[in-house]
Length: 189
Image (cartoon, rainbow, N blue to C red; front, top):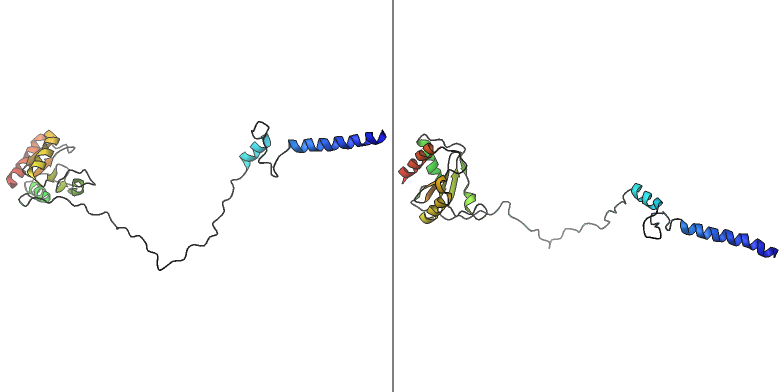
């Protein structure tokens, strides 16, 4: 009986060690320890909050060597030019109309060629050219029907003669001054 009594404390000590070992961390660093319900143990949660971000490994693959067979895709250095419908030969150029405004003493400041707005990448108005100033924008269309249709769309903010439309939208040009621009266009005929 004395032998059994001596074995009992040893067995209890081993059992206690095994139980305590099972209650601790499951992994070597303790970061994967969880409770029975699947949630992280307090120690694992605390370790996760304070652990540094894992380092990323740099690629050890060498860069491919240049090859004579390889080709590099070449892209145009600028966007392709927009092809606009041609201006009718009997219609004045938009810039010529602006020059006529200046010759008549009308304001035509901040002259800008906005013809790109005619094409499919811009407003897609179908015009041949546009020159804008602070007081008026001059649109030249490839035909009188297109000019008339656009003038109708813009309503009282536009004036048109043949292939040319004067647009006053957003300019703040007073009605009395607009009539002067319209009269200059009429004389260019």
